[in-house]
Length: 355
Ligand code: NAD
Ligand code: IPM
Ligand code: MN
Image (cartoon, rainbow, N blue to C red; front, side, top):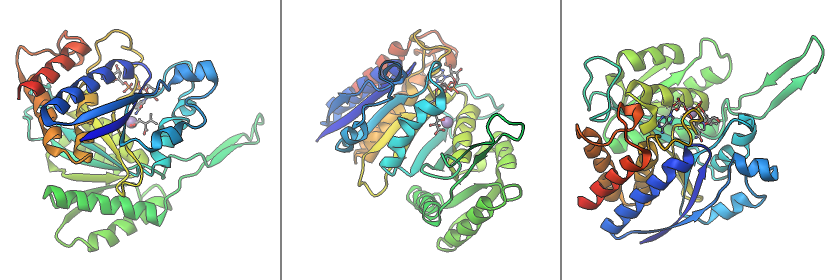
């Protein structure tokens, strides 16, 4: 099988971790009879500074007929974040209706956990984040500008279709995993309209899945429970903003956000899905070749799953775990070691080839 992959390294460490993602993809392809044709797109804040655009006018059109999109990170000091993100990453997610953002939270062997007494296997759950509407919105504006009455209005949009489809995705995801337990992130005590509505739709969806255990927590206490008792979760579903926050908190609790992957899925497969690490461009360490490439590499594993090659995805994940769990194995500084990005990437690729 042969796949055309749109590759967008983006900004900062995106350019350093992407080659490692591609290196491992190449290795797993060779071992599993798959070939990948990467089409490189250098769209980034650099492009913006040079051309006034994050991507060419027909950029989204160019991405459309790829089998998947593999992205590094977008956003860098020098271009305001809301400009860079709303002109590249967010339009891709929306144009291609990638409404399900799947983000695993897993304590891996070899990654020091900041919580006492936790072993690999203790923390292992999935965040399903709504990825197309909600709090992420350009609706609103600035009013009475320049006066003392100046104010901004920021609207959030929660549609019945949008909520129902992500909730259904979460329940179906739990069913596929054989983990019949969904936790809903909410805030219906403080947010007057959208969150009570989310809860109402969650109750309706839960009624369609009587075999499931369900929990609903307000986002404040849910955040505390992520730290105090992360073992209790299986599938956690939340709005765009809550899902975003929880998907840094979860990996933080497992030791480093640098290993966390994500899949922006268009479940109907009308459009390409996109795979990218949870982390950003890390301007504080960019250019030093010390970024941890595991989030990018694990995202490649999720891409392989999506393309219908779960055994290849599993091989990549297995190689990641094997390399990280070696006591004398290469570790980047975030893992307490001194290895470079490339050294860790090379070791994982070698492990994939050796399997
Ligand atoms: P960030 O994830 O880039 O960095 C947060 C911290 O984690 C930093 O200290 C960084 O050094 C560290 N870190 C992140 N990835 C790492 C890795 N692979 N290896 C080792 N350390 C790593 O978050 P931020 O600083 O809030 O954002 C920086 C820029 O990235 C902003 O422009 C932001 O908008 C953007 N961003 C983009 C994405 C994306 O493209 N999906 C995600 C998050 C942030
Ligand atoms: C993520 C990022 C993005 C998001 C930003 C950069 C817009 O934080 O993918 O988690 O909030 O979706
Ligand atoms: Mn985020």
